[in-house]
Image (cartoon, rainbow, N blue to C red; front, top):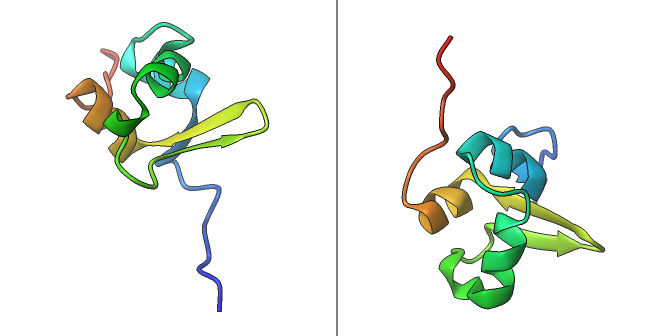
Length: 72
């Protein structure tokens, strides 16, 4: 039986979302994926057509820090 994946999980984000949430340039994930894909742990990034999906774990591994939380 196939594993169920919840695509509504907030741990799965588009590359544009993670760029905003980590304070990176909009094309940051695409650049890292193109130049050094091994920085992403296995299963933390996936390209669907032209859309890139990344997990929180993947971004934390690549950037070395957690998501930037804006001041309220």
